Length: 164
Image (cartoon, rainbow, N blue to C red):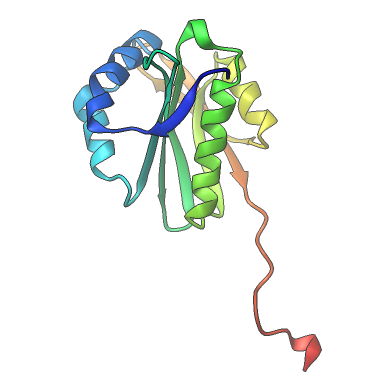
C-alpha cells in the first residue's frame, strides 16, 4: 500500500468516488445522490473512507453502517490497477476497527457469488457464509452470498463475584 493514505470521505470526494463506483460496478452502481445520503448520516450511523494515492487521486473507498450492536459493510471498491497491493485489506481493517469502536457485536456483508477475490478477502478476515440472496444483484441476476463475522465479547469490567 505504498504511498496510499486512508482518510474520511467528504462531500468533495463524491464526484471522484461516483466515477470510480460506475467503473467498478457498471450494472448496479450507486448514484451520487445515494452516496451523498450515506455521507449525510456520517458520523451518526455511517463511516466512509477513501484511499488516496500519492498524486491525490482516489484509488479506493469503503463504507460501514453501524447501529444497535450490528454493523454492515455497505461497499468496498478498489481501482483495478491498484488491486493486490493491500488497499482492500486496509479498507476492510478500517471498517472492522470502526465497528469495534462503535460496540458492534457482528459485521455483515453481501458479496457477489461470482466475486471470488472479494470472498477470499472476507474469509481471510474471519467472515463466514451465513446465507444466500438469490438474484440480489440486478440487472445481472447474480446471487449475493451473505457473510458475517462476530467479535469476541469482552469480559465484564468491575464487579467480580469470585473476589467477594
